[in-house]
Length: 195
Image (cartoon, rainbow, N blue to C red; front, top):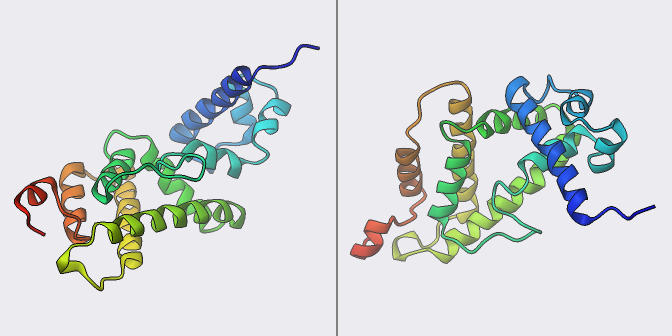
């Protein structure tokens, strides 16, 4: 029996993820069953479950890497860039806003999903707090970077909820105000030497 290549396995996995992402965006997480994903992907039930033993595993994989984490590591970047990237991910025109809100809503009542989502969120929160500590200027000494990171990410989740509900959000202004609130210097203030 010929051995299946890594490329083939990756393509099948992506085929399942694409099917699931489309269904989650169209119907919502709660109204999409694993049978729906099987049907949409065109693969067998066994093939889908081989890659994703549960719907929670599947939804995590659909959103995986959106925060920039790859193999447990985040890219080297500034706090402002991370916040801008996350805002763009859930901003106007993004199907990820609905998925994000649905995942958090489901995690509130599904302990299995919460057990997968919360650690990912905590790693992202910790990463942002570390970026904020690294970028601290003279006016921000003594601030609680962990709490600031938590508030900033909660604001991004709130933005996702607004976008998902159809409330107009100016992504650029959102990022500007958010980074000002968390005291992350903008390009202009960096150039001027402001804080």
